Amino acid sequence: MVHLRKIAAASAFCGWGFGAHLAIAAPVDIAPPPLDVGAGVTGIAVQRPIGQTFMANGDAIHTVGLLLLNLNMSSELLQDHLVTLDLFEGVGFGGPLLTSRTVDADQILGRLLGAQASVDFDLGGFPVKAGQTYSFQLSAETTRFGTVWFSGNPYADGQAILQGQSFSDPDLYFQVRAVPEPHPSLLWLIGLPLVLSAQCVRARFPLRTCDCRSQQSSAGSPRRRRIVTASDAFRWGLASTLLTPSARPACGRGPTPTCPSQRLPARQPKAQARE
Image (cartoon, rainbow, N blue to C red; front, side, top):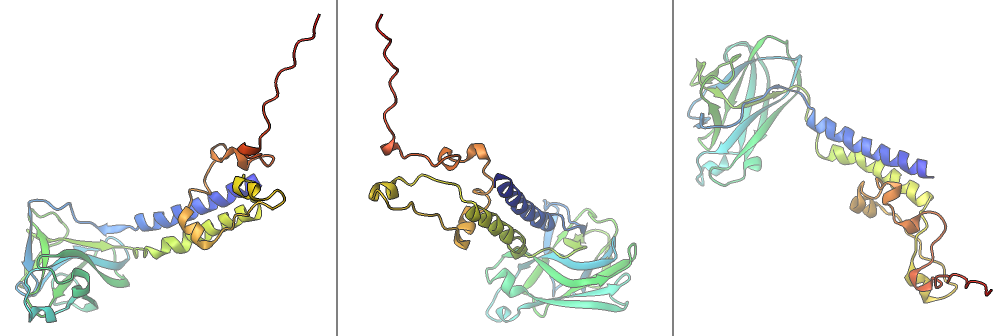
């Protein structure tokens, strides 16, 4: 029984670890450097056509991420919700248009002036050729939205495109991801069934516990049984399944214990025989 509990606990632990690994280890082909004093913001509509060239490191592009912000706000500008990213082959925007994606930036950023957030444009694993140059273009209907750029040529394999002109300095703050980033619910889909299976093993082979209140209520009444539910699994998580045998309560191991109030007085040592 102990071995089954350990196996179930290990399975639950591995399931959560595997899900966390998927969330953390999603490869990033191109990652921006940390934000510093060399960063600035510019309007998407003001600099159009605006974008960035880059060199593909893998054979597919799942997402292109950028920092967007509410650069200007008014009642009229609040009607503008969308930002579009177009992917082109080659340098600039004169080559073949490969794919396009539009996001509701208003839903992501909200309506607070200056609010910024990382926005991912999901290209769905669009196939590309490693080592070949591609360009993406950002477009918005009004001056509401802006994006972040870096000075000092932080990305040597590409150039920023501002008002249709290429510049080696600055570069846009962008990120290209090679595999899709898992949704947080994936961790629950992977880990929760395994945690529940661990709890079911505990319910099938319960540890005998001491329930003094039920024993004291009536002499012949049975002790209350512990029922494992899905809410218990959510509340306990792995903490209850990963307890080592030494860390479990002593009354949960071996013979059913006697409650403290019902314990017999300690046996006194026998008096020495009289000579």
